[in-house]
Each structure stands twice: as C-alpha cells, then as structure tokens.
Amino acid sequence: MSRQLIFIFILPLVSFGQVAKYQTKADLTKIYSQAIADFIKDANKKNKTELDTLFFGKRKNGQPDDFPDIELPETIQNVHIRLISPEVGKVKQKERKSRIYINLIGWVEKEKAEFLFFIFSNGFEQQYNYTLNYKYNVKRKEFELTKLQFKGPPFDK
Image (tube, rainbow, N blue to C red; front, side, top):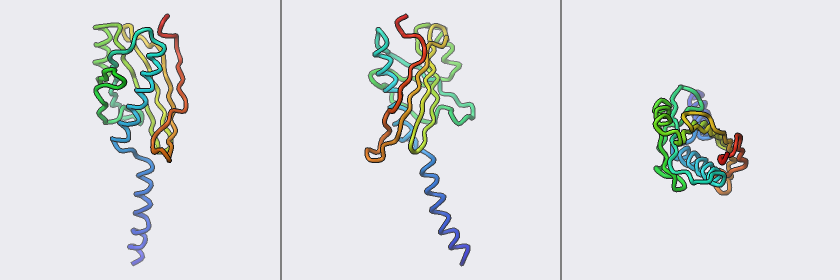
C-alpha cells in the first residue's frame, strides 16, 4: 500500500517538472519564428535593401543548442526561410557570395528564451551577430522581446 501512495505522490511531481522543462514542437516553432521575425525587422531597418532569402544551418551535433527538430514556415516577414546543413551552407555561399547564411543558436525555457544569430555572407565570412532575449508573459501566454543587441559593422559599409 505504501508503494502505491509513493507512486501516486511522485508521478504528478515528475509530470509537472517535465511540463516546466520541455517545450512542445509547436511551442519551439512559435518562439523560433518570432525570434527570426524580430531579427528580420531589425536587419531590414539597418539594410539598404530588404532581405529576400535566409539560409539557416540545421546543426545536429548532439549539443543542447542544436537546431531543434521543427519545421519553420516557408516565409517569415515576407522573407523565404530555408533550413540546410552547414555543409550545404558553405556550398551556397561559394555559389553566390551575397547569400545570407545564419547559424542560429537558441535556448528556450519556461520563463525565458535567448537566441544568438551569427550572420555569414561574402563567401562564408562572419559579418555580424545578434542577441535576442525574451521573457514569458504569463497573462498573455506568449514570449515578449526584452533585449535585442546588434554587434558588428553596419550593413551599409
């Protein structure tokens, strides 16, 4: 009888902890799409021409910051989004130096999220970086941008 009571007591605690720690694919897709949209909005303000297509490296190196197993929308903020392997990214950069390849690293938790955008162009040279931080608004049930930081030379050199 005591084993049953322990099991009944512990099972809800384990389940509750998992909900707090892990995000669903839909949750991850939503916050990644939001971060990409916020990046595009700011990049388009700094850039003389609007972005057309962004290539994101879909890394799978067994690290906690690997790109999650999600499918992003085909377009975000009227910009085409393509997920490709880093190896294909290098090839695409050599084909056309003006292409934008992004190494996106993200950490999403229940109450906060952080994203690092490492932007490559001009034959796979790193151009600049963005850091975006979010805090979860419990009342609105959504993440809100709290900080956007740009590091690197401006687009219009």
